[in-house]
Length: 169
Image 1 (spheres, rainbow, N blue to C red):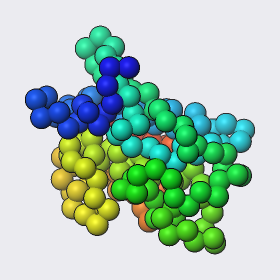
Image 2: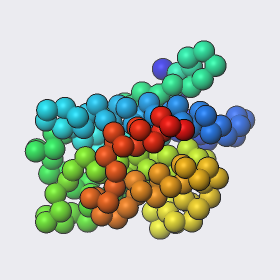
Image 3: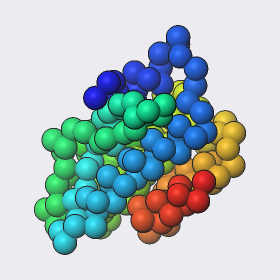
């Protein structure tokens, strides 16, 4: 792998990612997460972030792989209420509510935060999430991010739906 997505996003000597690059990278990440979620025993990554997305050049475009599975766990065994960087975490991961079980939707939330970060080239800020989403120029990406970062897990799409939307872009 050539570098992390984080190092690519925040290298001031390089231009921002194009909309096409954001689509390819985010689709690669979505496919990886969907693979984990679609297993017979679904696996939650728990630490989706720009530092854990590795990039390499394939021809003239960046391609992505998801890395760092140290906090990944089977859904049925997942009692982790906090894993990874807090700025990417779903509300149910942070509040530790025992009545709200951890599901694959925590990765969907983190994916939405990651997509926002790619689009605006700025570090995620939990308290400033709405303003950051409004900065996304591509209306399709903005809408997808909004759906992924819904407070309630059941309001977030499944990764296969995210993939369908990204493939149409």
